Length: 340
Ligand code: ATP
Image 1 (tube, rainbow, N blue to C red):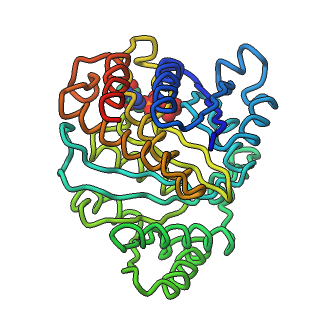
Image 2 (cartoon, rainbow, N blue to C red; image 1 turned 180 degrees about the vertical axis):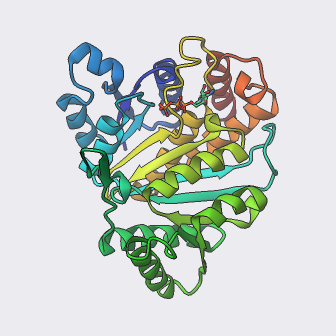
């Protein structure tokens, strides 16, 4: 079929992981006949330093014209890059799975949940003002945005364990979270096959640690989802194990949840699984859209190779291992070659 992919390496460890990822994807493409055409475009802090702009027009055009984008982490310019791309392309659903994999020290071995976070509104709309000693941030919530994120979450739950918990704070944020909660209930009534519950965000933060295995899909607003997904990643081995998808109508961008990790950048020890598992989510999404079996195979192959790597101890120091990023990626490349 053939797919045009844009890869944005980003900053810090993103620059170390990206070339290895591209090499791995090219191997997969050859093995499975995916017909990937990969183009590299830049954005982030380094891009700002070198070109004077954090998100060049040329990168935006590449994202617009490709079938999917794989983005690495960016540092201080996240607001100008990630948040802008999400808003520009209306990537309204931020999907962040947290899953226990064998060989990784997890809180429990039966965690398999997904945080579905509204990605375009709320407190991250960027409407902040200051004057004198006072600063104000506006939290924008619309019925349309609440409805479409809720529809996405219920659709996803129908394909998974059939449970949605809407996370908010409607007892305090009566208007904004009140609207979110009302709309979630309306959408729940259209999905009678899905078990629906609601939880205040503080209780959700507690229950994620107390009984993470009880969750399937957590449906929430922008900032709550940002915070809860970093928490969830710690239950399953940390940020190096946390992939994510930003989905819109017909367009998508996939990225690790972690940042540019300046403390370990340049050492060659970054955990690449969050990026690799983001590529898995990309192939899953391409399969759902195009029905191309090769994409489904790619997604399954990536996950089973990650499981093999972890089981055989191909782990970077954050997971208690002693392997370098390049060792892990080279194992994965060999593994997919053997499996096909
Ligand atoms: P940002 O502001 O860009 O989010 P940050 O330093 O606040 O940056 P991260 O870059 O996500 O957040 O890093 C948080 C911690 O997790 C750091 O100690 C970093 O080394 C570690 N970390 C993040 N990603 C990885 C990874 N892929 N492999 C190993 N360690 C990681």
